[in-house]
Length: 429
Ligand SMILES: NC(=O)c1ccc[n+]([C@@H]2O[C@H](COP(=O)([O-])OP(=O)(O)OC[C@H]3O[C@@H](n4cnc5c(N)ncnc54)[C@H](O)[C@@H]3O)[C@@H](O)[C@H]2O)c1
Image (cartoon, rainbow, N blue to C red):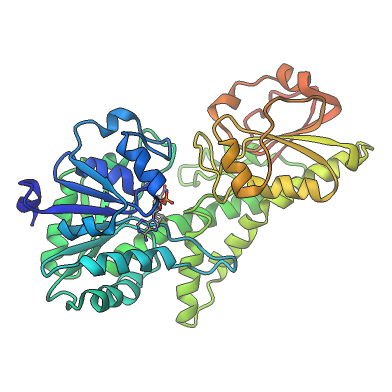
């Protein structure tokens, strides 16, 4: 299979060309013939012009790639090796929504031939590949799993906005449904992953490894957020405590903050869901989710209390929120918890302006129904720096005072300006 792919006798298809799928498709397209398939025509049209609709990749990343972008399912008939990288979101009840994944299986199953391979990269709970995806592939293709087609799981570990840890420089975990496929899948990824490949012992182990990486982060950040709630009452700065505690060699390096996005704030729900089907209520995982999901409104409430204590009339207060994306230095606003901060302030009648140097105003309007403020209209009674974008790191107290009202509050969620603010009323997590 690998030799046939390298010689162009067989084609590899990547299903779902988003943050994960497009980089993997382009990287592989330097080694083998690739079909990049996505159901969104408009995104495919942009990629055909050598541009990344998610604004993560540069035009030069498309150069020298043997790739055909398509939204026509029929083009998949030429593919023999499929990599699936579609979204795995949660629904409004925080339950896994396997809709896109199962729909991708339906598409692949329609064109699956004997001897083909399907590797899933989407983050799922342990067991999902073989219990939810494989039966659909079998049913749709009429082929028998392992005997007639092989399946593997190789989770993606890219970190949005991170220019150091990139697709090829992060060790890739791979797995297959039998020893032969496990080896072949590992060797395929070894064509592009310079950091090397870790062969997990089974598909379930690989699925579980990915989900606990993100769940571990979520729980650790939730612990920091809980500490922040405690230390706020005690009038102790959490970042100062963490700096002091961090001088011990085995103290873990985590900080409080808003946990949004489509990975850390979502994946633990997948694990909690699956553990429930085994009769285990995941207490620590659910507690972590509970704390992190409530952080946005808790932060706004701290601000509201401060404004009241300053004898300000909440309904005539004006708040500026700086940063709308789910994390620093990305343009992705999906599942950003900043909206919880905004909505909590607004629910008290406070007027809120929101700015972000990276987010698209149209996307913010589409996703949250609010407009990004194009031009600041000072003075603001509270300024909330919600995201530590590079553009915000060097802002000075003079800048904040120039846009602040008298007795204004600076809410520094990420603790960027700790020790540098003397005239404004300072608060951080
Ligand atoms: N974004 C990250 O940093 C990251 C990191 C690690 C893992 N993951 C996981 O990777 C998976 C993909 O995430 P993403 O961020 O790339 O998502 P994304 O939303 O950026 O992209 C998914 C793409 O899949 C397409 N799609 C949806 N249903 C489809 C279907 N049935 N057939 C073909 N295409 C379809 C969408 O149009 C979209 O372009 C998820 O499981 C996610 O949890 C993401």
